[in-house]
Image (cartoon, rainbow, N blue to C red; front, top):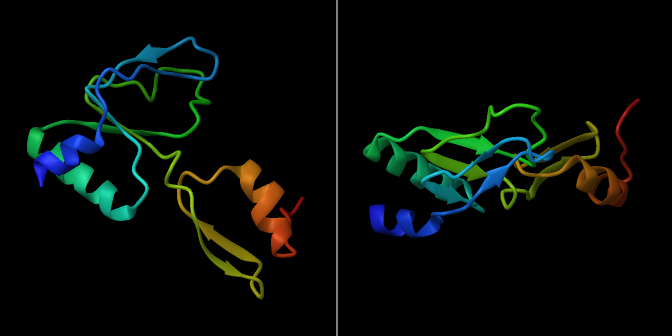
Length: 115
């Protein structure tokens, strides 16, 4: 399993926050698409004694997301999972952007954010 998971990660990736005030280069940078990939990455990190940080779009004003160990970007973990029009509830994966919800997913289903 370790070799397969290791190949999911990229080394040498420089991450920065939106304002480019904080930078870091994690040992491995992952962009998983599935829950199974995330599980495998976390098991691999545990085996190697590595800490894991997850990131979204980098909107933090601090270096909170920075690490020299492993980083998981949620950008590709962004599918819609369930839409319940009766309860007006939408369940999405952690990388789904509010912009996508607001401009695509909600309008296509006759829904909107409440004010």
